[in-house]
Length: 205
View 1 (tube, rainbow, N blue to C red):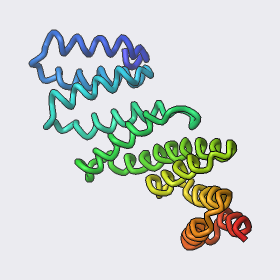
View 2: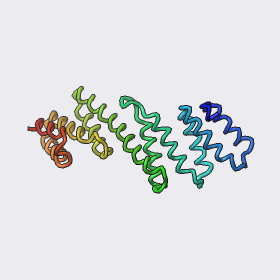
View 3: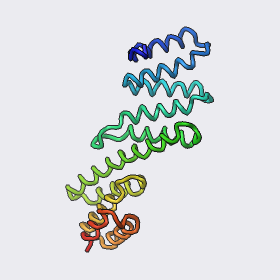
View 4: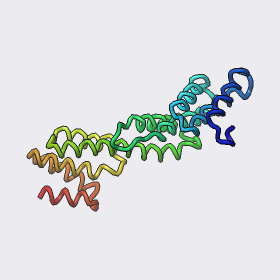
């Protein structure tokens, strides 16, 4: 069924193995295969539930790193466009960070690190979109909170230089000169060659 890409059928068949032969050596493998079949079918919620159940039932199993990785992938595959809620991105980061925390030497750790960066970039992009919207509505205090969130919580993402520029922009609009100077200095210290520093420098002049 898997070879024929009948993933839904395969998921059910693997569960039948577990149901009829719960104490066999293949029952545990069947749980994982069933969850993976759901993943291949694009049924990410069902797949995540299967991997979660496996972790609960077999907390000391050698395949726990794999199950955690796949739970992260189930969330990662559902990363929405940046205009939507980023709950899935948060879940992906959680499970991938669990791998790094609990199984740093596993074969999944390297890819988990990369996926964390990409998922956080999605989350930062959402904050930036909301912040820009607030600026367009002249709601500068609300915008500042969003841009600060990017700077404080998503420091490794590509959005930080613009977030610092937007803070300069918002504080200048509010007439808070000391904060303009502070954030311009931070931007210049860390991103002197970035286009956003040049824009911020011109804006603050």
